[in-house]
Image (tube, rainbow, N blue to C red):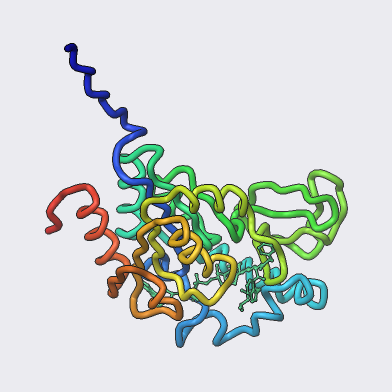
Length: 248
Ligand code: BJW
């Protein structure tokens, strides 16, 4: 009897299918503020004023200033060891790791991660509230900014998802959650839906679930396992473990 050759797994078939969801906590040690911590953005701003379509309609100058300042912070920030570790995991396990971020910063990309699914949009992109055109931006958005698509003035906003708006790419996210072997949430409080519901969704489809956060989050008890500490320590340690390495 001839023996069937053992299929040699290609790089795309190796290892568990991992879905990673990141939140503001992963960028905290790069100097970007979180939302709900004691010194977080929502302690200085009313979220209805700056993170809703109604807030933008009522006071566009306040909203543009808020995001212009955050864009400047983002430009001067650099990726940290947690961003770098996730990028390395994606490079070593091509096609097996899906990275979904709620963050609007570009620190995952600058660390070398690709692709990155920005479910709440990107601060380095603009959106025309009149025609829906989207384009890359580096500097401030002015009150009289005009759209390169329809030329309307004064209707340009950051391409980010505010409360009451539908996050980007939800269908694709549902797909990857339904076939994940492992779901990992990093640096997110679990206070905002639909992202806060992903752990339950992944678990319902049979994925193991892991929380990596500074401390217990609002939804910690939904995870099979949890590790608490600063992202720059616990994320590189977890990635090394996933890759069968010993962590210094
Ligand atoms: C560290 C650390 C370190 C600190 N190391 N860790 C029930 C079901 C479904 C929806 C709703 C619902 N009830 C209400 C809603 C609607 C609403 C919602 O969730 N409201 C809540 C207040 C309850 N959701 C929406 O409106 C969403 N849209 C929607 O639901 O559409 C309808 C729909 C959905 C699906 C299908 C069909 C229809 C849109 C939500 C948009 C959120 N937008 C924002 C702003 C984006 C732009 C910007 O950045 O300004 O997104 S709000 C803000 O919160 C931002 C973040 O992405 C998001 C999550 O915050 P995150 O990342 O978790 O940060 P924090 O600060 O909360 O937590 C940081 C964590 O890090 C903490 O745990 C720290 O401990 C930790 N940490 N340092 C490791 N060094």
